[in-house]
Amino acid sequence: MRYLYFPGCTLKTTGAQYDSSAKAVMRQLGCALVELEGWNCCGATASDMISALLSVSLAARNIALAERDEGDLVTACSSCFLNLFRVQSYLKRDPQLQDKLDVVMASIGLRYSGRTRVRHLLEVIATDLGSRAITEHVVRPLNGLKVVPYYGCMVVRPYAEFDGPDLPVSMDGLIAALGAEVVPYIAKTRCCGGALIGSKKEIALTLIGELLIQAGNADCIVTVCPMCQLNLDAYQGEAARYVRRRFDIPVLYLTQLMGLAFDLPESDLKLSQNIVSADRLLAKIDRPAVAVHA
Amino acid sequence: MAETKAFHLTREMLDHSFAGTVAPDREKLLTCIQCGTCTASCPTAFAMDYTPRQLWRLIQMGLREEALHSRTFWLCTSCYSCTVRCPRGIALTETMSALKRLALAQGIRTEPSVFRFYESFIDTIRRHGRLHELEFMALYAGRTNPLSMLGQAPLGVVMLRKGKMQLTPSEMPGKEQMETIFRKVKQLEGQA
Image 1 (spheres, chains in turn green, brown):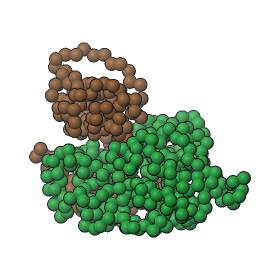
Image 2: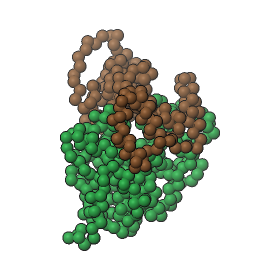
Image 3: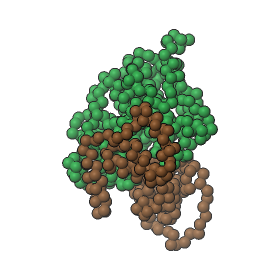
Image 4: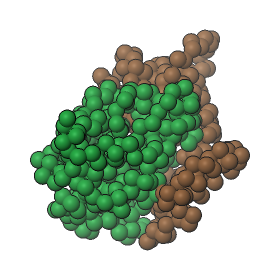
């Protein structure tokens, strides 16, 4: 299977290990992620504040580029997914916006028709491939590992059709397929604070602290959003001081966890790029299978 | 939680056409039944001056200035919890974005750091087409508190060392198209 791949800015910077592990895992599953040439920033949560037309234009340029090729446009970033996906929803509600968008697109020699499907990587892995395909590739089952499935907001809200908006389950099945134990987690889709970590830090640290407290004594948290991962991982120490607790819980991308079960090399998974060390986690799954079962 | 604020209502304070100007749902916003599901779902309501429910009430009443000067919509993280749960089906998260736009158009910046953060992000995108973290953080610090760069430095060093941050912006093919898009959007919005 071949997919057009929209990495987005964070997967080329602070979420580099997501980019690398996603490509490696998909390759292992027999799928190619072909990077969309000439892609631009989706606008994140900033463009909509300036103007709805700007927000739609920045996202639509990428979709228009994808429309010159074949295949679904897949992104692993939840904010990119939201921005790219909502173009059609904005246009449907406001026909005048479509006319203006056409003018903007024409000014850069492009045309947006809306024929390319925008999808999140989680949806592709969960529905196109599914748990059975995942199980077939597991060579190092993650038996005994307690994993918190943290989805974050934008992968399931408000547009996702493949899973529920409050307590989604698509990632739970994938984690179980790797042999790990899925920890019941009430805060599955509670916000991590998003961009407020940069502008209103105390508010974000409060939310991050709450999410980490809820994770209890699990072995790791797994996420599919680079903003969630950054907030829970890079700001874990600060959040601990702010809410007066101790945290030491690795925050992995789903594709990193899958890669561990597939026994892919560190050069693909780049666990060393995570801030909270995954060493204790690795020690746990490095034990021979008999010892884990005992 | 937000405290109750008392003020004397006068006829001059009311702008009954206001709700009709708040996109995207305009008249639909008037159907809000004040159930409070939005507030109960909101992760940042604890830090707001008006809870989301109270903000919709201000808009319904036509208390335009009070609504636009609130910090509530600046603290919205766009998590869409309220949107998917609203029993009236009102696009509440997008209404929060619309309030940011209306406030900015009037020069109201009740939470300047939030505005500067987004503005610095957008300026970086306009120049490079893709995010350049270092320039973005430097722009933001310069516009808010330059000394805050010192506080950010340790994490920045870790990010650089781990190869998660670049000193120079990545080269986006066709990045000059960004400027064309921004100008065209401005021109079209000017006509509106």
